[in-house]
Image (cartoon, rainbow, N blue to C red; front, side, top):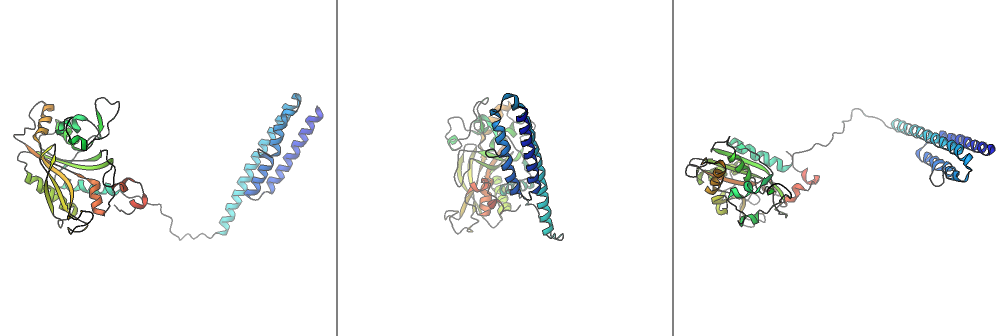
Amino acid sequence: MAETVESIRQQVQGLREEATAALAAAGDTPTLRAVQDRFLGRRSGVVSGLLKSLGKLPSEVRRDAGRELNVLKREIEGRLEEARARVEAQAFAARLAGERLDLSLPGRRPPRGRRHPVTVVREELEDIFIAMGYEVYEGREVEDDYHCFEALNMPPDHPARDMQDTFYLEGAEGQRLLRTHTSSSQIRYMLDNEHPPLVRIICPGKVFRRDDDITHSPMFQQVEGLVVGPGITLGDLKGSIEAFLHALFGSQYPVRFRPSFFPYTEPSVEADLGCIVCGGKGCRVCKGTGWVEILGSGMVNPAVFEAVNSRLGGAVYDPEKVTGFAFGIGIERVAMMRHGIDDIRLFYGSDLRFLEQFRG
C-alpha cells in the first residue's frame, strides 16, 4: 500500500511540474485554454480523469490520493489565473505600444437625452394658460365612479358611458377605475372647501380608455379647463378658446365652433381649427374639409353644480348666481398636428429613431 500511495504522489508531482512549465510558456489566450483543457478539462483532463478513478482504489489509499489530487487541482487553477492576468497585461501593453495617442483629439461626448415631444407640448399649454391667469391643478389617476361619472351628470345607465368605458380595478374598495378624463379633477377642486366658488383652473394629466388605433391610445394625456364665476357667458368661452388656439398655433389659422353634446355641458360646442397641413385647401389630414377638430367645450351644466352642492351641504355653487364653461384638448392631438404625425402610437413606441427627431 505504501508503494501505491508513493507512486500517486510521484505522479502528482510530475503533473505539477509539467503544468507549471506549460503555463509559464503560454503567451496567449488560446494556449492557456489548451493547457486548461489538458489538465482540468471535464472530459479529457488528466487531473479530472484521476479524480474520477479514485473509486477504484482501496479505501486505505483513496483518502490520501484524493487529498493529493485536490491540492494539485487548486494549485493549477491558481497558477492558471495568474498566467491569464499576465497574458492580458502583456496584450494590453502591446496594444498601447502599437497605438499613437493624440491628446489633442476631442473626447467622445455621451448622447444627450431630449424631452419627449408630448412633454414639450404639455409644458407649452400650461405656460399659455398660466399667462391667461389659470391655476394648474393635477388630480388623481385612480378615481371612483362618483367623481368620474355621476357628478358629471352621467348616472350608471347613461349612454355616454359607452364611449368612455375604461379600466376598472378588481378588489378595490368601492368602484375604482382609471379616470377617463381629467374632468374628475375639476369636481375634486370644487369640492375642496378651501376654494371659493370662483374657479379658473386647467387640469393636465394622463387618462385611460379602451381605444387602440392610429388616432387613439389606451393611455393618452389631456388638458381640461374650468372657469366658474358670476356672469360667465358663451362669449367668454369662445374668446378664451380663440385666444388660446391663436397663441398655440398662430393667428393665421381661423377657429370655428359647431354645436355638439356632452353630458356635463349645456350648450356644448366643438372647436375646429383651420388645417395646418394644407392651409384650409383640403387634404388627407382634414379629410378635404379644410378644418380639423381640435377640442370640445361648453357651458357647465347646472346639474354638475347641483351634484357638487349636494356633497358640500349647501348652495356654494348656486346655478342662479354663478355660471361657467369647461373645455378639454388632447395633448397628443396637438403634437400630431404640429409635427404632421398620423399615428399616435409612435409617441409611446420607445423608438429612438422617431423620438430623436424632436428637440426640446
